[in-house]
Image 1 (cartoon, rainbow, N blue to C red):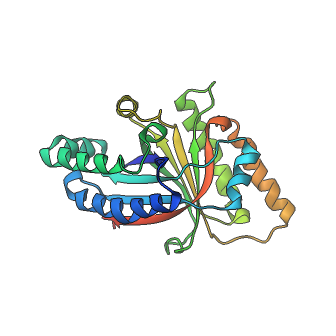
Image 2 (cartoon, rainbow, N blue to C red):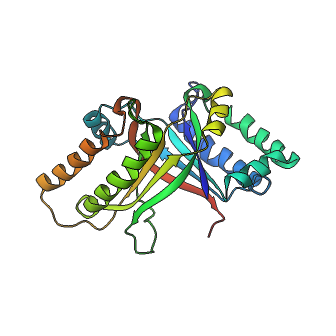
Image 3 (cartoon, rainbow, N blue to C red):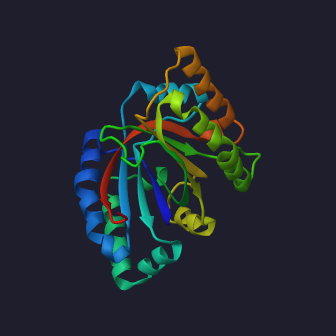
Length: 253
């Protein structure tokens, strides 16, 4: 499957409360109505949570502040997505959604790009995530001196196993890397008025079984991950913040 990631910044004339209400209760059902025409398999909104941990994660890395949230949409394949949008029904549905997004989203400050997921670990034992689980959403821009391929390789081959090794001590439940793909398609989105795409996102869900450890050991584990991130992440162009997922529909089950 492929996943579209939509990094969303709200329009300046919307309060946070009004923005999240419209996104969830007005736009979400509208997307669900277009799912058939657009061949959408799954749709999740992740709303940014106002939490002191956001500033802690930002400041220790020297990152940009959080955005308002992200949308994730899954298709069976890139070809299936392109086929859906090429039909008259798909074209009409896409226009309906775009026109509605313009009511509450600032396109010039938002990013849209296609990705492929890599599941690094899932410690939920098949039970799934708890309803109140929060998710660390890490919007990743590669280091300027690396190619995207080198960034993705270091992230997946080196950093992924390192995170997995600390999952118990840090109480992580699940970890997914989503690497940017389809650069030509992503470039067309920028030409349509969106901000340049990212190189990928990391998602880490909290609430996993936590191994006994001292505060010092936990702090050392966290800092080891931050230092390794510096090998491939341009910290000053990336973001890390807590979100809460809202699954609007999931037709993959």
